[in-house]
Image (tube, rainbow, N blue to C red; front, side, top):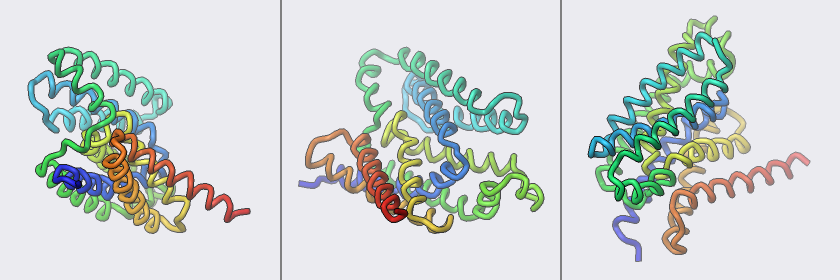
Amino acid sequence: MITIFFIRAVLAGVGIAVMAGPIGCFVVWRRMAYFGETLAHATLLGISLSMVAGYMSYLFIFLILGGLVLFLAMIKRFDTLPIDTVLGGVSHFCLALGLIVFSLSPSQQFMSNMTTLFFGEILTVSWLDVITIFISALLLLLMVILNWRRLIILCLHQDIAVTMGISPFKTNIILLVLLASAIALMVKMVGVLLVVSLLLIPAATAKLLSHSPKQMAYLAPILGVSAVVVGMFLTFYFDLPTGPTIILVSGILFLGFFYYSYCCRI
């Protein structure tokens, strides 16, 4: 029998998938998967600080991610080191520091929250979480729509953006803020280790089926919602871990459409 907490979880998952789809498209176009991994690992530090402080709050997550976004934007602008080298170092530094801070929380809390922290637990969301996700999704999608032209031009070529009077630095910050905000909202649902997968896999699947950026941006959330709904029902009927099941379904969709597109080319 479907219960109210299951309905809340499905609604939260749908809201997350709708939000993650278009933003994930820019991650694919700009090849920012490693940026996403770094921001995801930084959320662990934010969550750890909030737990040591004694209460869970998005404030710590947004403070950590906000500082990291500015740092990464400056590094990318000055190009003093290869960006993948910087991201690799920052990512593992945040992960290590987050785990150390997390270990300072009470022992019971440490043990009970470790699995949830890494793999998420969407079944525990409240109505307040659902409302927060939908309001945040609307705001982030509005930001995408308002900045669509400059973001697309930046994805095409940075020099073209400059000649059209678009600041690559400011536009990169906008994109990183969108990515960081999405990750911060998603991490509770699918966990630190899986959050980037929900951004990347539906967008990558949509790329196989699309002929234009707008079509890809429309298809990605549809594929994400499909993976969430199917994954949630598989979890409900077969007692599977929720976050990994959603990502697994998303991956199966990608493999299926990849095989389909490969066959169509032959």
